Length: 301
Image (cartoon, rainbow, N blue to C red; front, top):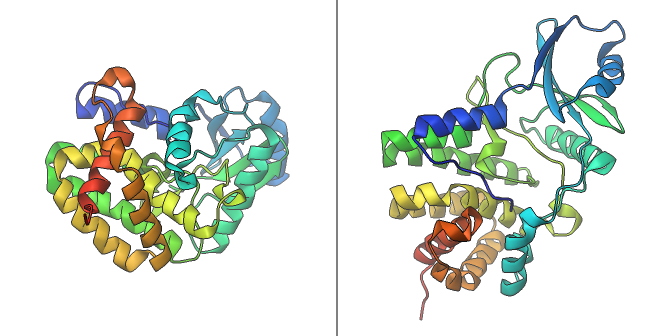
C-alpha cells in the first residue's frame, strides 16, 4: 500500500493541495472533436503530451489521456512489504505497478471488466500500446475524491467525517457485491460524481494476478482503512467500528470477514510502533490501522 502524502497545515490548505494533485487537469487543452474520432486524437496527441496524465476538451467533452509511465520505484513499497513478510499476510503486500505498456494494458482490461460489471469507471475511448484515452467521470462537471470530502468533513466534526467515511465503505461493498475487486482502494481513488454516485479510478496494477478473489477483496477493505485510519482514529474510533462491522455484515462474505479478523490478530503487535513522525507517515498509518483493528477485534484471551 503506497503512502498518502498528507501535508501539514489547515484542513482547507490540505484539501486544496489534494485537489491539485489528485483531481485537477494538468493541463486542459481545448480542441474540436477529431474527424476520425477518439483513436485519431490519441494517435496524434500521445507523442506531444508531456505529462503522464492530462485532460483535454474535445468540443463539449472532457477526456483524459494517460501515457505509459516508468515502473514505480521499489522504495515506496518497502515498508509495507516488510510488514507483510513479517506478518505472513500476502493481502497487505504491495502489488508493484509494472509501468510502461504493461500498465496500460492492465488498466484498459480492468476498466472494461469493472464497467461490464456495472460499476462507475472511466470508459476506454481509445487504446494504443503507449497510452489510453479515457472518459471523464464528471462528464464535464466537477468531481471530488472521497479523500477530499473526508478532509473537509473532518473540520465539521466526527459525525460529518463518519458520514462521508461510511460512503466509502458502501462504495467498496458495492464493488464486492458484483463479485469483483478494485486495485488501490484508497480514498483518493474513490471519486464522487455530480449525480452522487461514487466512481473508481487508478487500475495500473492487478492484485488478482497473484491473489485469490477473497484476498483481493480483503485488500480493498484494508487499503481503504489504511488511507483513512489516522483521521478516523483521531475523530471517532468507537463509532467508526460500529459502521465497519455493520458494513462487513451486509457487504462482505464470511470468508472475507474471517480473513480480516485473522489479519487484525496478526497485526496486533504493530500497535506498538513508534508514533513519532520521524519514522515516516506510512509507519504512522500502519500503527493507526493496527490500533483500530485491535479495538474492533479484541483479543478473546
